[in-house]
Length: 294
Ligand SMILES: [Zn+2]
Image (cartoon, rainbow, N blue to C red; front, side):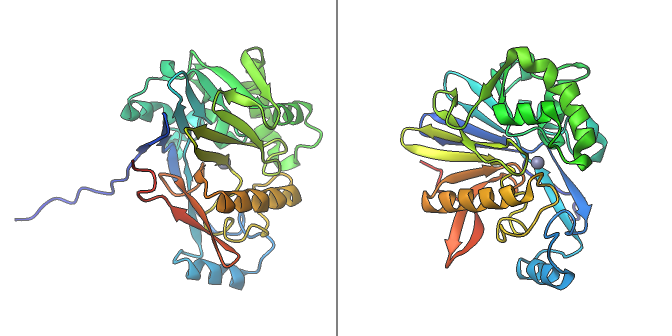
């Protein structure tokens, strides 16, 4: 007997327990984009890039960009980190976080806090839905430097001018209901902001700690598990301050490897949970297997 082909099937939600917290990652979407350079390896030659792609068993002429917001349930608060693309990319494979919340057992009204790593479009686009707040009961948290830099605008690169308009339209009106963090400040008890400036001028990572276990939500410290993570010094077009982004990438990768941190990365392959392995001085992304069970 023959069976019908059923088409691609990919998981959209992942959850694990860490101490007394539960962490859930949800795939907002995925987009295949032509080329590697740009956005990655923009200071490298085509042969180097092709060889690096080949060594990683990846195509040299395209890459897949995935977007994965994270929810932390501390037992007291439900905190959502970044809100995905929202309506703007819904006809292009992304923007499904809010729809997919129900697959994880949550409703938009359940979210108590929305914390932003930074304000690039794929991290803030989903903050409104049908001209209303997408998470109607949430208060908001953002890095103070990030909010101030985008508000002032004089150091925002010109290619981000549409992005700045989006910030002014979507984020500035939330300021009354927003907390502005310095590095080291808490989002809620057990979740602390970590300075990760460079990808955007005030980009934050967040360290989640419970019962002696820790995970780092690193946002966009690296945007690709091979092209940027393995070569932290290679320039990335997405980074607004490229030198600072490289320094931050190296510092956070060193910390992740040395402290054996569980990492959750917005653009790491879904479920976007893993580790940084330091293999004789070279970094590699190691997807989580059963380290998080029991
Ligand atoms: Zn991003």
